[in-house]
Image (cartoon, rainbow, N blue to C red; front, side, top):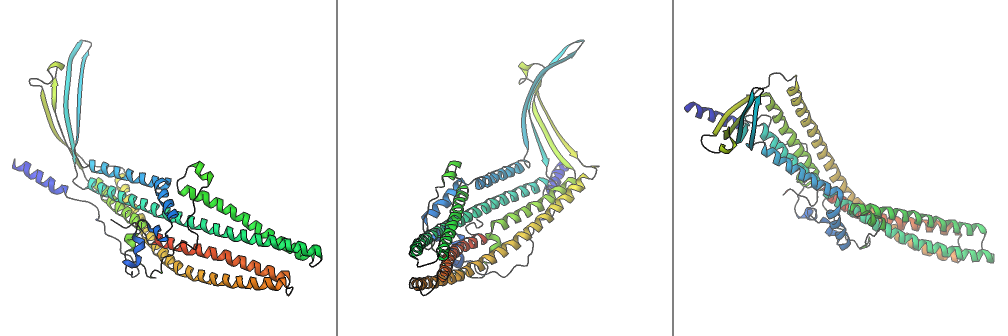
Length: 458
């Protein structure tokens, strides 16, 4: 009895053994981070797009989160990973099964005897080397990685919807600019046709006006094509049906100038960027899983011990199966140790170690990319505001220049070439102003995405 107790105690001690290295977060040369409190407050809100104060945009984001197919696939992958965790946990538990059999056997000398059995059987493999615990650890890490991947899809989706919406509003604004410009050019053509018929201008001047009008009309047609393509692209992001995609019924809210811009944000990076970005969390969890798989692979070098037991009934007659002395039981242990596998176990260990190095490189590259994107987004957010101010000043100057040039042209003080040059410069300035305003809004979206806005670790 004492020997049995000692043996059980030894097995219990061994069951606490875990092969393979325990995970340690890699040390990286990171820049000194800034504060991450109120200064980055909007980037820790799940509905970060509310900062633009456009109810239509809010509705589009909610629709995308509910119906986008890429996000639905990511959510399904999380459910798959959660099921894998359940499978890994089940491998650490005893298995219990029930069975029954009734039959008759014999040979050419006679019909033989009948035999009926019924019982329960249980089996349990002692996790002496931590194989199943390491596999469970890997499965949990993969689940967390899959959840982080879902959050990456979600953040990317909401950013794409916002950027797509702002691009559409920019094209709407540019369409109005071109339509207004085309009306003015058509009026110029009518004026010069009258002048030409009256002999007050040459045919060269008339043809220049007509060519100028046709150029604006072609730009408008190209822009209408871009608008249609942008609407269908946004409809796919929203998860609309094929019929809705063809209908291109994308609602509009505030104009570019009405959309609110956030105040200037600090130029330093938040100190908790590694925890904020879901893609970094995904890469690290995959690294943790690869590290755990090394321990699981090393456990294959050692013997596996299984305990089995059965209890039930056996009888020659089915009617007396559960009566009298029909009860039977059996307890057994089984040990299986590898002797020769043709190098398979060694190769599996090398594979696990190589996969860890691969994930380590991927994690390091993800962190590098994250800090680059965050720095670029901070710079773009700052510089795009200066660009908008420059274009705004240019547009105001060109409008004034056009008014003065038009008066001079009407008075006959300058030729049509000077007027056309000013008109082209004014159109270019107005189009650039709309583009720079959209770039300002897009910079805010990209900054939120780069800082991992809205999806902090719980």
